[in-house]
Amino acid sequence: MDKKYIVVTGGVLSGVGKGILSASTARILKECNLKINTLKIDPYLNIDAGTMNPNQHGEVFVTEDGYEADLDLGHYERFLGKEMKRTNNLTAGQIYKTVIEKERRGEYLGATVQVVPHVTNEIKDRIIQIPGDVVMIEIGGTVGDIEAEIFLEAIRELALEQGSENFLFVHVTYVPYLEASREFKTKPTQQSIQLLRRIGIHPNAIVVRSKSALEDEQLDKISLFGGVKRKNIFSLPDVSNVYEIPSILYSQNIHNIIALELGLELNNKFNWSYPVHFDNLKIAIVGKYTETEDAYKSISESILLCGVEKPEIINVHDFDEIDDNELKNRLKVYDGIIIPGGFGERGIESKIKTIKYARINRVPILGICLGMQLMIVEFARNVHKMKNANSTEFNPDTPYPVIDLMEEQKRIMNLGGTMRLGNQEMIITPLSKLSNIYGKNEIVERHRHRYEVNFEAFRFMYTENAKEKSNTKFFISAKSKFVEAVELYEHPFFVGVQYHPEFKSKVSDPHPLFVEFINSIRNGVDNYGNSC
Image (tube, rainbow, N blue to C red):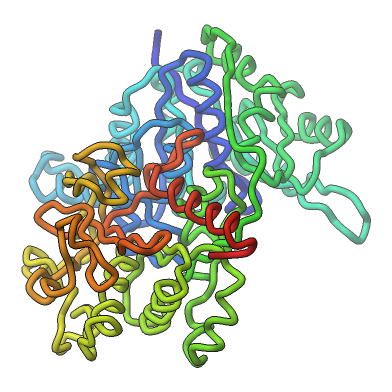
């Protein structure tokens, strides 16, 4: 069988849900016994998403092979239940960098290097290399964006070369509701389809996003003016639970339409289990990237996949000018706290105050990456009286540098793609909380950091002997050549990890660290009636 391609484009506005649509459709086809793979194309000039501000672009998702990707790869992993790799993401920056490097090496044999054919050929070569019987390609942005034009041109050429029978174009578009006239307006969708057709791509299917379900009359109109068969128009209104979407699309027969258009044989089985009921536990993510909910996407989804309402994202700067009593009043409504990763000095002192509150008041708290490092800073200052203890990231002259730049990082000048990234092996300490959580002695987790625990400054504060565990010392519960996790013994849940467990949560298989964090909160609510 020739390799088949499903190309997902977006129209009218960005953020319309192409990533969720692509992940959901891919999961349906996987359930139908197809070998499905995915490719996210990002038209920006960055090499990867590693240097992007989460407030603008959402979280940076890290793959097992150490690639810093767009958050849509997180959707693919959670929905498909499989690990993505760096080859599952393609950016304009990667393409232009490769073309320029080839030109410098003389690989074009003196030819004038042009967008067509040299850039388009490079894009086509990357697409062809993606393994799988069916490749789901999502093109970021919207049709009409100048950045995406070259990718659409490359795919138009590839469809011509490989045969149109091997390509299915799905256009995801938004239909707004006009309050003044109390009606949905399909004109923007019609114009978006026309723009795509001018590029030389005629969509085979339309997925209509809207506030609520459209009537047949509006869908018929889109079919007529868009030149797309009515049975290939799918309505996808807003839903409260995105994990419903595969079931919704399956009920609209999207798998059989795809099979018909591409000449695929399906076993037509669909077994999709996802969380439906969610406990109303109040969990706070105390962070500083609060301009978009996507900044902590994988953490929020990990909580949701445990069967709990999404956590509330609190701007840590809300705590900058308040005293300990006011801080306690604001935080006491929460049953659990997460201190996420991040970079830069802003909000650090307020995060430390939050950690102190959780430690003293026995509130379950999970520190991730920077969160773990700040747990150690707080403990050094307030338990071991190491005044002005800090990370050298925030105070290079601290007298107690309990967190310091990794030795190999001191020789690195570039920021992009140079941290300790991706899967790293570590050993779990017997009799630790983590040993109960994982149930094994060796684990592999994904990392993304430059700073580490400084053993020399930290040596008075920890033990690795289970018989010596106490609340005056941290218990190192996982390590490699670095400290990977710490915990406090007599506390419902006071665990910090240097790695990012949120990146490994899947539908029906949330990361066990989040499961145990939630269980500790449930136990506290059951025992005390409100919060721990």
